[in-house]
Image (cartoon, rainbow, N blue to C red):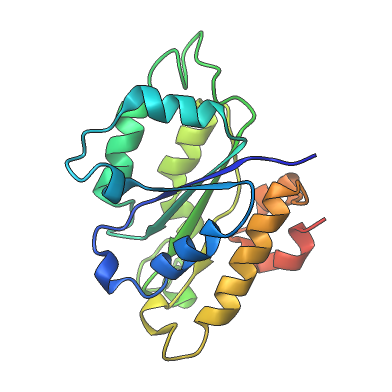
Amino acid sequence: MTQKVLILFAHPAQDQSEVNRPMFNTAFGIDGVTCIDLYARYPNHDIDVAAEQTRLRQHDVVIFLFPFYWYSTPAILKDWMDLVLEYNFAYGKQGTALKNKVLLPVISAGGEEKAYQEDGYNHFSLRELLRPLEQTANLCRMNFIAPFVIFGSRTAVEDHRLNDHLARWQQLLEALVEDRVDFEKAKQLEHLDTDFNGILL
């Protein structure tokens, strides 16, 4: 059995992207993965709600790929959620279009992992800061799984960490398409690298 994976990529300054853009490019070559660059498709944020809802119906796994800006998503992804996840489509009495689909945030975070702790610079874990996305998934009756994240993304290239991250990213996408991810285990983690090999079936 295979799954259809949809990547919604949101980066407002792609000429400065050292991590997210290479990740998006990597995903293009994988069968079963649909790649949508939201800023390229909707430069004026004039989102085609019907087309986006149709695309959501056609996929099993939805990935939000974005840099973590001000503890949230870039603006176009918030616009996309505000407009596309309509009452009686994504939630509400008749809103079952996304039921049992998977939502996976894939994030680059500029700070080191130790900054995302109660006694760290940001005071909250990344998983805690993603609660609005998690509750959005809950409301839509989706399965929210722990984020796939690269910490310290500002120095990933100079520290020679990017290639390993891209290799794991490709491995994760192939496993999602081939339905080889233990979603129940992935839901419980702080982030997927906590036990990356353990979630692969």
